[in-house]
Image (cartoon, rainbow, N blue to C red):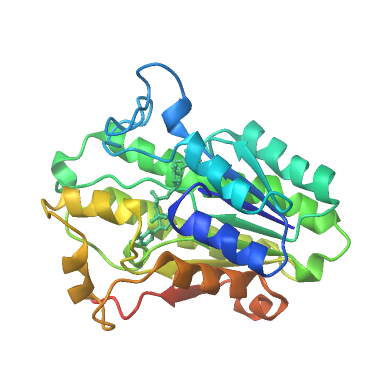
Length: 272
Ligand SMILES: NC(=O)c1ccc[n+]([C@@H]2O[C@H](COP(=O)([O-])OP(=O)(O)OC[C@H]3O[C@@H](n4cnc5c(N)ncnc54)[C@H](O)[C@@H]3O)[C@@H](O)[C@H]2O)c1
């Protein structure tokens, strides 16, 4: 039984599919900002209460389509990871519907950048902190207690999606880099707090992966498409979200427990 945030598209959706393939039942949670209300978050306008996010986030239709692919295994919920109470409800729903919670994957995030640090509005830094860091914090805080109380803590896994930007400085992405470095610090601290409990925590750091966020990143750099990012990978190609999903699913598995406290570089040899 798993909880996945940022589940409506990109790596989150690929992770839900991969976990379903491996037999999990999944609570798939996403902001679905396209449905927040009139004028708030329509395609192309970003989310009104997320200053700096100028690309469309996922829609309720995308989340529903994912459920329709696996109607017996996926339960969808509209959740803003900034809202601790909403995440508490999502984790509780997992336990109520399926009796336990074995894995939580924090994939939800936004990207903001395109300017040097000294020209970046502080509101944009707050958005990155609130979604990309506190969102992961809230996901861990809501899910880990259920794992500790559950029937098999030794099989329970918390996985946060960090980034290649979490271990190096990337041009005009200082705020995003701060957030992703913090995600890695969060996972290390959480893993230490979980010492001896059996529950484990790990960060997965993808390189350039073909998702709507990478399209948004290309736009920040004034690029027409994402293909030029392939040159920054030793693989010479972009990573597909299904590849990251398989890495995340391994981290969720019993064998993934040995990775606790570490950063799994799924970067395709990212060179910056
Ligand atoms: N695509 C890349 O190249 C890349 C590289 C490294 C790391 N990452 C990380 O991978 C993860 C997945 O990103 P992706 O590339 O699939 O991007 P994406 O934009 O396709 O997916 C992110 C999802 O998070 C959701 N979301 C955003 N804010 C939310 C909120 N407040 N509450 C709930 N859901 C919210 C969005 O609606 C979207 O469905 C992110 O943590 C991202 O930072 C991406």
